[in-house]
Every structure is written in C-alpha cells, then in structure tokens.
View 1 (cartoon, helix red, strand yellow):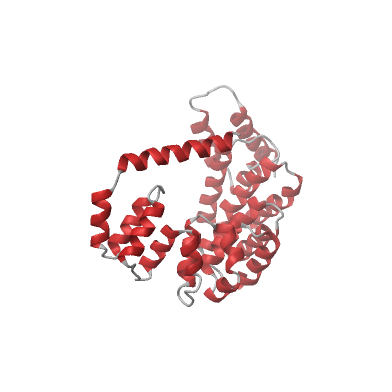
View 2 (cartoon, helix red, strand yellow):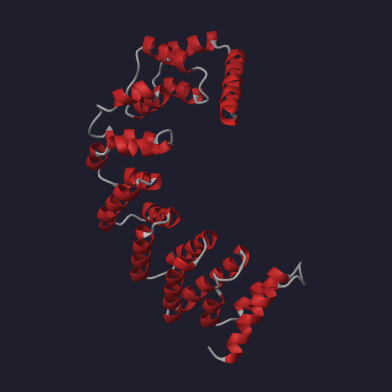
Length: 291
C-alpha cells in the first residue's frame, strides 16, 4: 500500500479514536470509509487494536458493498487469511470479534472460502467458533458435512451440534443416539422436535416421554394425531396444573376435541390457588439458587 493510502487508513483510525466531534464522529467515519478503496478498507479492519464493534461493523458493511460491486478479489482472500491466522494470538474477547468478522465475510464469500471457514470453525477448540459452523449449516445444510458433524459431536457433545443433527440428520441416526442427544437438549424446544422426528418411524420412545414430561408428551401426541381418554387427560391435568406451560396442555386438549375435559377444567379451575402455588415454587427455586 502506498504512503497516500496508508495515511488515509490511519486518518480513519484516528478519527474513530478521537474524543472530538462526538455527535458526528460515526457519520463522518462512515463517510470517510465509503471513500476508501477495497484494499484500504480491508487494511482498516484491525483486531489487534481496541476497534469498537460499531466501527468494525461499518468497515464490514463497506467490504460487503465492495464485494457486491466488484466481486471477492485478492484483497478479500488476504483478509480472510489474516483473520484466520491471527486467531491464535488474540485474547478471548477479541477471538469473539474475529469470529464475528469471519462469519460476516462468510455470507459474501465464494464457495471455496466458505468451505475453508466451515472447516476452520468446526476444528476449533473454542465453542464460540464451532457454534458459527453449526449456525451456518442449520441455515444452509450441506450433506457432505455429515461425517464432520459426527466427529464434532463425538469430540465435544455441543448442544448446538445436537440441534443441528435433530434438524438435519436422518432419523435412523437420531434413534441410534437418542439418549445422548436428548441429554444435550433436554428441556428445550429441540427435545420436542427430537421426539417428533423419532416418531416418524419409531414411537417406542414416547413411553419415556410420558414418564418424564407429560405436557410435552401431550403436545407430541397432538402433533401425531393421537388423543387421550378422558380419565387420562384429567389425571395429566391434575399432576401438571401448576406448571407454567398449563396453557399449552389445555391447547392440546382442545386439539384432541376433549370437550368434557375442558368443561371439567373450566368448572373446577382455581386460578388463584394455581397462582399462589406458582409463586411459592418460584420463591423456593429462588431460595435454592441464592443458597
């Protein structure tokens, strides 16, 4: 880079760090960045300094426009190389910033760069990077990564990896590894989705669900087109009437066309008693967490 370009890059860096022009500093900075060449803009992105998030985001937006207008060129390949190469030298908080930059560039990069970044993310010892790979693959699944995801799961058992497998893996794999995957997502929406996907070919695990989470069991049963006997439904209601998901259970009974069950609930429902019990349980949980 020539002296003139270097001075322009340094000028914008100094402006970002200046305490003057407080009200207009962001607008001026963005305007000056817009004047830079693609090479200068890539040079401006600096993870070694205390570059603020907003400044970094303005630079990335300019890089995005450069790529859209002129394509992903040699300077952008060099920038990816620089960011990947510097990760190991950065403190943890700046590693996150580097991951953000790489993830941003991923969306505008050609396929060869995307494959390189996915591999880099998946092979990282840091979960903040692996999560970025899982997120990209959940949005745009590539079956060629199946084995790589299996390897990542075996090595780390990340909950984000489990969610990706529930969304994208063949149901036969989910059945084979059911309990270890369930343990990683228990209590989340993805545990429900796991049961729903499993039930496409194997409903034997529903018994386990009925014994561990009756409200989720009711929801899955509803989605599968199954209904409860009246006595069963009322028993489930009594055992779960203080659960904060009670509205979901009642919705399930409606979908199951259990009119008589809903009438019994409507006539006997003690809303004040339920509210008091929920408050007591909340206080008990708070006391345990404080001790």
